[in-house]
Amino acid sequence: MVYEGHGAPEEGSEPTGTGRTGWPLWEVFIRQRRGLSHTHAGSIHAPDAETALQNARDVYTRRSEGVSLWVVPSVAIVASDPDAAEEFFDPAADKAYRHPTFYTIPEEVGHM
Amino acid sequence: MTGPERFQSILDEDGKIEPKDWMPDGYRKTLIRQIAQHAHSEVIGMQPEGNWIARAPSLHRKAILMAKVQDEAGHGLYLYSAAETLGVSRDELVDLLHRGKHKYSSIFNYPTLSWADIGAIGWLVDGAAITNQVMLTRCSYGPYSRAMVRICKEESFHQRQGYEILLTLVNGTAEQKAMAQDALDRWWWPALMMFGPHDADSTHSEQSTAWNIKRMSNDALRQQFVDMTVPQAQYLGLEIPDPDLSWNADTSHWDSGPIDWDEFWRVVKGDGPMNRERLEHKRKAWDDGAWVREAAEAYAAKHADQPRRVA
Ligand SMILES: [Fe+2]
Ligand SMILES: [Fe+2]
Figure 1 (spheres, rainbow over the protein chains, first blue to last red):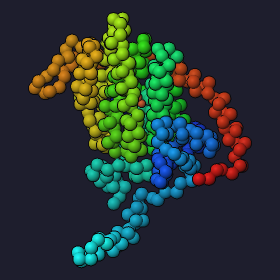
Figure 2 (figure 1 turned 180 degrees about the vertical axis):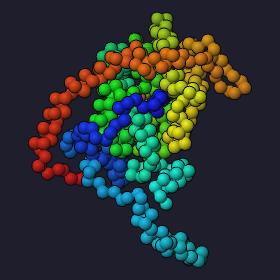
Figure 3 (figure 1 turned 45 degrees about the horizontal axis):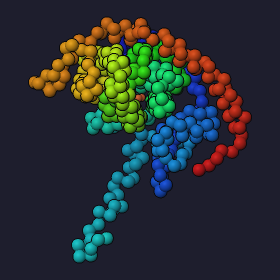
Figure 4 (figure 1 turned 120 degrees about the vertical axis):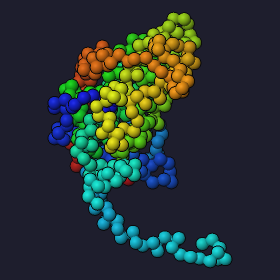
């Protein structure tokens, strides 16, 4: 299926990012089954929290993919900056002693 | 590392680009266009099948068809969400579709004339879509790739239910078998056209391949589809409407005859049998739903001060 389009883009076919934005966006998190944490599944548009939950159920759990749902307004998510990721996560890079394999335990001691 | 350097090094390692990463303007534009066109296709694709929901031959088939069409609506939503991570809004994309500025897959501009067409669509159209979408699970843009994984999980049922419809028809009366053959006759070539122009004539392929958006060529995908489908047609006892179709022992592939590219371009440019109806129906559904959207917004505004439930 050719989703890449045919020929040069038509005049006026590029979205400008300034059009109507419609209903707010919500991030959807699903707990697959009891004992697991909620994981991000995608997002959904809805005018309010209640409708967001119902829409998320209809769109993301049509085949019993979950036993619990969270919806969070997308604007409430604060993300780290990928351009600063190196510095941001740098403090962990040189601390190998935080890992169990850093230490040598004689074999006679057994599993530890 | 600068943004452009990191972008290239992620591609070199066959990694995924995520929404907040630096990316070339062309990469962003190409993805918006492709994902939007893909989303529009899922949504418009509900129409040819929706045409048969009220006329399905049994309650059993009706429930299945409704579930399938509902899945396609979901696929559209996953994809619009993926596009929105690139800084555009769903409403804007839908508006571009409604104004005829955006395209959708031409396959949905063909009419569904008989119940057998519902079988042929599931088997061939979803089959071709799966071939393409399995490739796209490996595309370099994270949200698009994840949407494809989710969609591919759901597509398998679509293809199988279609094949089962045809299997039932070919084992029925002579008239039912003829109906199945007629559907194959009409859907075979449009299904092959879904993979797009030959590699030599495919304008965007090279750049998309360099960006790891496209991982296989149009012709390679089409060949994969033909090789997979021919034995399935043989099992049904139906004849593929291509007199040149023959097994090539040297390549271990099926060779097929020439595609009518004039028809392909005619339909792409808007002169297919159903182009006007599809878009009109879509616009009408949007306009008819205006009062629902307004009511939902009014209700949300009225309850905005009340505390939200917490996890
Ligand atoms: Fe789909
Ligand atoms: Fe499908």
